[in-house]
Image 1 (tube, rainbow, N blue to C red):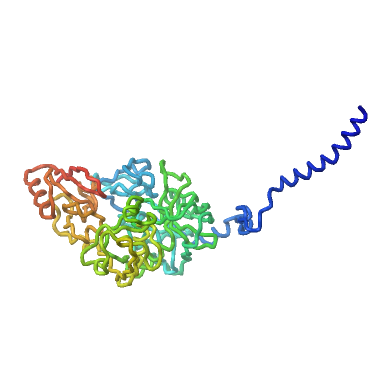
Image 2: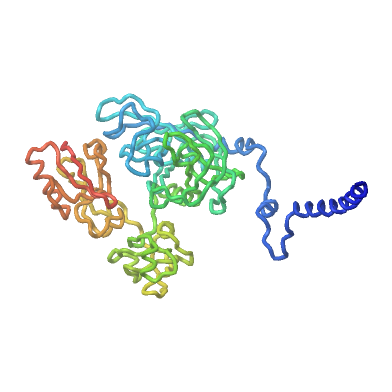
Length: 508
């Protein structure tokens, strides 16, 4: 027995040493080979500069350039008097992407969030608040279009509490941007735009604004995603951020840690009207060009090519023999337009513009819109399996009257509508397919029953009183016939974005 004990002790000690060394080597993990990629933590360790210990210096430096904006005006008919709270149901994805003023008067975005009692059932008053920031010492202020929409009075409150009346210089509905001007005896502190193109997912950002009318407030977070399309307009390219923003933050700046504006806070994803950690900001590279044009001319001119386009899905890609579902498929070409003159044909797939790949339809829209009229763009298209280079001389996007050639001087039978012909320009402007025939709505009186029923420019009236109409003249003639029958309202069949519905519109 003793001998066994001695033997086991003499055997155990060297074995224990071997096991200990083996365990130590196992804990260290395998040694990567010379050609192996580094682990993700090694990559981060080589780049991490460290989170800021405080945002106080950044906020202190930039906050004087941020302003509060108060608006007042007469609301179009149909605005709920005294009930402007969040939570009003909608019928599409815009439910959840409420801008900070809950709803506009057509049922989309932009109603004021501070209600007052209406003066009368037809002309209620409204007041609202938002945010903005000064971009020049002369007093130019950037905000969202929906903040100042329909406002007759705009007041800007500076960081030091001074209130200044503001003049509206111009708006751009497609990007939801507006430019104001205030007069001050002294030069004002201002912010500069940064390069949003270099902003990466995960970068720190600071949002400053006027949430719920509380005054200058700062929140911090990161860029959660880039290139978000929230169906707010044709040029959607939003930053998604998690810095808390709420009603009243609309139009306020989003700063990087260098104190430059890299975004304009515009929308939130919110089932309940408050912050749930998902907000959206217009990138500065998109906003800066728009603001420059508003400042110099008061309006925005965009490049125009004269095509209707659609995405390339997997089935289309396969049928055309494409390697991947990328590019923009030309569905139709406006006769006599820039694309037609350059030789672009329906069925072409546009894959590059000036050497930049076009992966999605929105990319083509933004590329062409950013070009100045009379500029030349080099396009590469796929046609019958071959790549072709075509030079397109960019035109100017038709203005609303040019696009629809509307008879705006003659309202349609007392309905509060102005109607126009469905010209090729009108179809391009409003994205109306060739197979839709009728009369296009180009103007709506905000105090009319048509506005109350939600009609808006771009709607196409395809039947009146259950009788199909194929032109402006037919639509107006049938509306007059219905009116002469002393009916209180007329039943219209309206097509909007490919969806048809019946609407009973009262005569004035």
